Length: 255
Ligand SMILES: [Cu+2]
Image 1 (tube, rainbow, N blue to C red):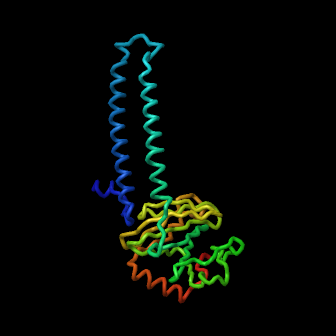
Image 2 (image 1 turned 90 degrees about the horizontal axis):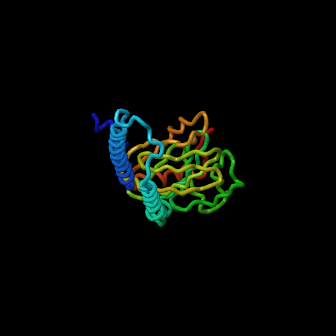
Image 3 (image 1 turned 30 degrees about the horizontal axis):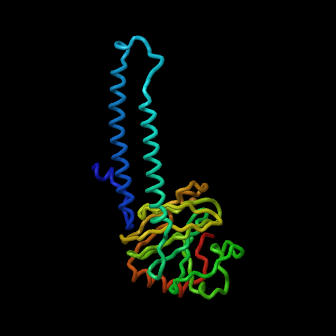
């Protein structure tokens, strides 16, 4: 029972197990600190009990040991942040993969759903320009751009191939949303006017919920109607070929 109660949500991405390991490590560390601090608290209650200390000491601690200790803790935290956390973020998160084996999807959040744009079989997106954005052209696709001829759109239906990295370019049509796929262990704010990449390599085939992780309005909860399907690369390629033939250029969205 406890195993089910305490387990983390299903992991479908390559880096997801590292995120989970980190979460578990932090819980162990916090558990350890909790035990130590509680023991210290009980010791202090006993050590400075009223029966042995009838008169309060108004000077208190005379040594500077605790100030030094705090300085050391601050230094360790600065080293963790500057030497480990920031370089690791720059290496793992900011450097999205590129190349022919990488799948690319543009994500346009709106009140209240998810629009997805695929580059089609040529794997190249058509040009985008803000001046072309309308309610039927949410990504601002430039008309008559050749590489955009096979680009197609879906609404609340995200598909990605298993075993290949997918880079999501996240943006928003209206307010700030946040693209969160718990199974992939990714979460990125969707900000109007910006296109922010985030990426993951899905491994486990299946259908997973997409969440909006910013309270974005009164229909916020219905953004959970977005789903991501991880399928075999063959099934994904067949789907892309069929969609590009049948719905290229057609808005799939919210009416
Ligand atoms: Cu939202």
